[in-house]
Image (cartoon, rainbow, N blue to C red):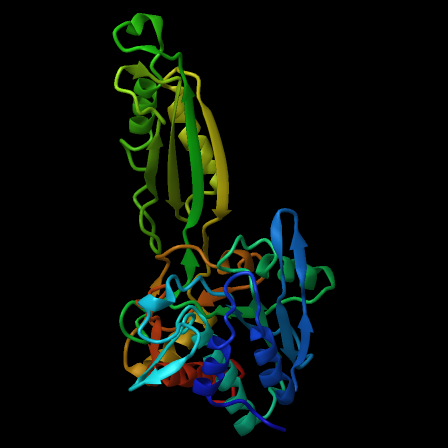
Length: 385
């Protein structure tokens, strides 16, 4: 039986598939070709959703004992922008000195390659685990709308009675050094569009108009003047930030008919999105002026309390890097927001500072280091260290 144990070669093959979301361009096939010879049963899981592109996904499992330890990742990447801005073609996966350059190197094809290689080394040295199973949940819809990826894969698996024991998401979690940080939760994210309608009129005759900007300003002040909370043991305080104020009025002597503002709330585990919306509406209502508020929720906040999953990953990272990992909940959202409803989940991957940038790159020693950390984790998770 052949084993894929070289993360460098595997990452090159993945980067050379220009899988800009939502297209696959062969990336899932690269993984199937690596996993099938190891004994994994591979299943394509394509999904469709109205008004969004079709997306292909991959579920792979080795073993039938219990609920599997899963690795979750995404092979889709953000567009590279102007290729002429790159020092090397964004999908060439060129190695220059000690780094590999290519879109997706750290976000997050590098972690996928590292975990596959870690599993290959584990199987080569120890054989399949006798007391558990290993799975891969790989989506092509993380950088996009995320309707046809991990969320629907998890639901389909649950509907057929296939559960998950625990999951590692390979997002780039480390700020500047490998081993610095793993994520045990994420803040929720809520977006609001606040609209206030008035009566258009001449600025010289304000009594004959009704300026919507003035109550909008008071409303904005009402939901920013006091914090929602002071944070918790594992989370920073909830943050409400306005991102735009729009009137669409190029004229200096015209009171506009309407005004709107957009805001985002990143909230901790002390709240649900429903709590946040109620908190906002309660304060807007006190202004006593009609308004329209549209709410969309990207994800709820969640926390995987420190325990076996985070302890073993932190210990594996420290053994390789001599760094005590920070158990963090900072950053944006990831597909962990879907996985947390099905099993304990943590995130641990490469260094994040090159993610989505021109000349995205990973150091080869960091790629090998992450592979070794994952390899150690597998030993201790399955009790064969």
